[in-house]
Image (cartoon, rainbow, N blue to C red; front, side, top):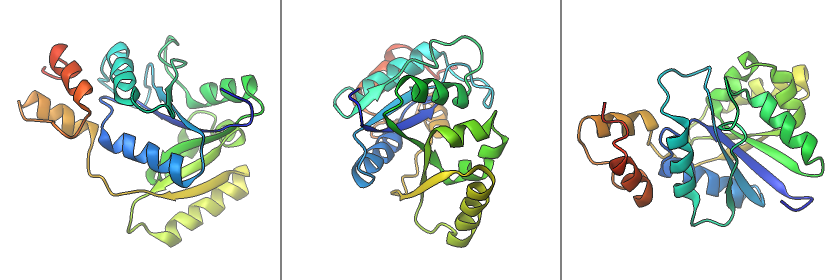
Length: 202
């Protein structure tokens, strides 16, 4: 990564990564003037149970983004043993790349729960929160939460109105388990990987 870039950080379990994730990442890249998006599949998740093997999730993410030169992948969290904590990852990135400007892509729901993450003050010190909002969001509720976080943590927050793509990883896993098609919900190479490795069958 070159000095001075504006980097969007997109973390998640990506179990599996789907078209909605990719559309959100491209929207953030285009509309917020970012130079690249860094996908960060989580390692051990302390917030979710029964997450698929991290090697599968990492490989699916690599496959999904391989045709976009502006999308990169990081193995910082999948290389780590134990639970993955966002504050550790963000501290590492900002300390090792001090001239970069980092934007942490989150959903509007996370804006209301981030205070309960581990060391939220360090997260908000490291990055600008880029909050993806769906059409029809409660503007006043969002603005009140932004003011709260700004006053309490001096948080830097920008809003991104994203397309309302109703796709969820949970729904995809359930469809695979039930023998239903997930074509067009994930990229073709991810679809092939899921079939070839019998992921989500059980």
